[in-house]
Amino acid sequence: MTLVPATPTEQRVITCYSAFDKFFPTTGLLDYTEGIYHNDPATPYEQAKQNQFDYLLDQIQCGPGARVLEVGCGNGTLLHQIKKRGAVAVGITITPDQVRVCHEQGLDVRLMDFFDIDPALYGTFDAIVANGPIEHFVQPEQASRGQADAIYARMFAIFHRLIDPQSAIRRVVNTTVHFDRPPSAADLLRPLFKWRLGSDNFHYTLLARSFGGFYPVDGQLERCASPHFSLERAVDGTRDYFYTSEEWLRRIQRALRTATGLRIAARFLPLLLRQPVQLATMVTCMLITQSWNWQFRSATPPAKLWRQTWAWTPQT
Image (cartoon, rainbow, N blue to C red):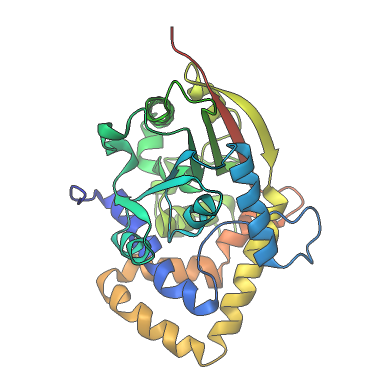
């Protein structure tokens, strides 16, 4: 199955993850999920990441026979965890390279935009995991036109249709970065040089142009979930994302200082030639301004990471 031609905003997200998939594996990072450290920054990242996987799957009562859809499945790491529990794992992604990697591992992954998901999948799942993709569902262009609430409401309506009404589980769990100091979406469409170096708008403009997306604010998803879902649990994972992001940065910097850096450059070059502006922006964002890490670093960070568990609501 192939996607319809990507819009420029969708292509930005595809390019972002295509770059990650060429860059991160050479540093020992095979996926892009944050860990759960239980307030102990000395916890090894691999253990923290396993803690995160266990938390997500426990939230949806993932066990033998459960049918689980992962939206934005990346390279399939969580899908393997689902299968280890004896559950049926299906993933979707908009990135062709990730579909190829997952198929090579024998995983059931479809090349599919969530908002154009195959209606044949409606009513076939017990639970859904969305570990990070919601951050890309709204773009600054859409938010500036006041469309964010409608997009999130449509997202929850699709989640609702995908879940089997007869299931005993009927849960959705997501991890999503939220704005704590929300910028104006229109501001993020302005040229980067309009903003003072190091200001919120400077960093958020870089992030939007690097990765593609405009975050929700606290309470927005809960408002848009009604009447399809009720919020069952919300956990602030911001500090966990801080520890994770700093570990990612350390590994990347260490790799770039060694011969691995040459392998990274070789893998990166073809994509850089095709998408020079976005790739140069991503390198600036991650390594020079460190805008990704900036989101979570201060005592009062401008962004929060929420882990949210939703209970399916019957429709009258």
